[in-house]
Image (cartoon, rainbow, N blue to C red; front, side, top):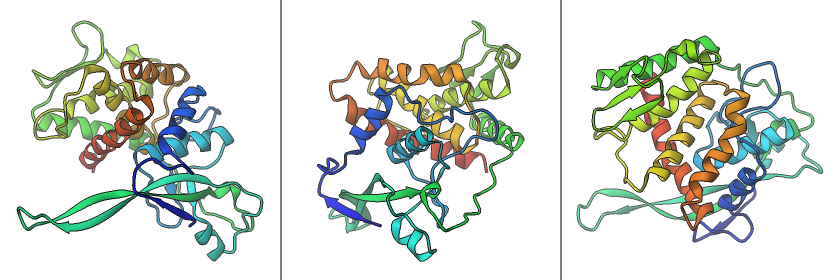
Length: 287
């Protein structure tokens, strides 16, 4: 894997915030394929380790894969070479990898992890590799995905969440003061998966409750972006495809909220990082 190192999150050679922002501005929704048939490609992951890419890297690689109609699986140059792959003439995609150092806390004496910066890594999609036949992972069955969603909702209810369907006003919402989610009747949605993708967003909001994924209450706009990106990641992990209408509106939705902030590119990246923690919490409830 080709890498370069920087002491800050900004990098002259590659800046993830810039890359993700460019994808958003281009009108691409980097979390949903645009072709018909088959299953959603799911979260970007390394083909050899099975490890999924996280936060901004995940959204960015989704955008790249969607633009070229590629698989959701990625590989480094070294990994490809070991398998006998040929990448001649292929252009890599860049990601940012955090540099974590373990230190001893001066006050508590406990070990802690400290972010020291980022390094840039180059990865390739497996569709770019010549000379290797990859056995791609079988996509999750969509019925299993719905079961996972219901399991997450059930676990939240066990924690005290109240779920109301249909909601009194026919809308989708989460009331923090009551720890309550309201959803329209599922029959009102275009299809089953449109309903569950909307429910994803409200469950993401519900994680703000004390004891779940507590976070700073920055603003309504910031929380809306945070929950939407978390829901997006959850839909991709569970292979719950979004409708074309949602795809068309998603980038505009995020960009509208971003107008409230001056440093829009880095706010988007920060939001994606915090949304990853929400995603991880909800996915743990699905097990």
